[in-house]
Image 1: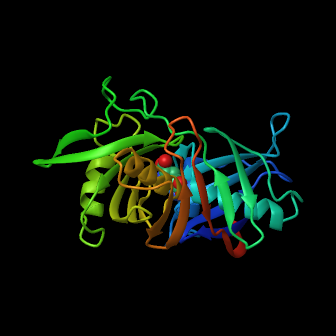
Image 2 (image 1 turned 60 degrees about the vertical axis):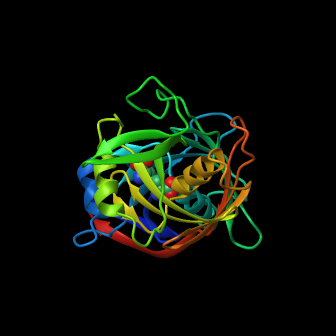
Length: 277
Ligand SMILES: N[C@@H](CCC[C@H](N)C(=O)O)C(=O)O
């Protein structure tokens, strides 16, 4: 089968976008892993699937697959690319489409300056919602990992995040500790692990070890999670610039746990192609 695709990136978090609007397409986990493979396939952190609306008031259905082939419910950099893709390809003339994900409805908006703003929904903190293997909700959790006590905040943006504060992201053990935490039994559905360095109340640096991928150049939902945790720990203001390895995101959150969080950043098409599956 010949499969057309579009390669996109948001701050270097890269995607293979598969269109299932004109020709319905389903991909197996093996096919996802092949597409994501940087040596034998196209190469990406996530495969994004663009599908038709399945309900009134919604324009499209958005599905997300990690490079390991697993389906997940949220991808912040991906939803910006999704909005850029459906608009640039002429599948909509709306600059503010409504997108159904498995985590709920998302509303990306194409800004006049080319950036994309997304309302990322409400954060969830209950252990069962994240999920965590505990019944006690806490602002800070502690785990013993490889003989050390690790402290972190935990939140769901539709996908699970643990956020650690570090003195410097340059020296943080992102790969080794990220890997251990990602698959720690405390997180029954595994977890994305963010390492946050607070520069000031309005600036952080962040590296993220993503579930099902490894460290990526940027993670949109991870940036939201870091700002939420940093704000709950009284270290951040309501508008924060998040410096990731691939560039910057602007994140806004009032601090009211019932209010949504907003993310603004770039979404770029890299190239198009056709691959034999
Ligand atoms: N890169 C993403 C997050 C993708 C999903 C994540 N790896 C998970 O397993 O939850 C983003 O920009 O949010």
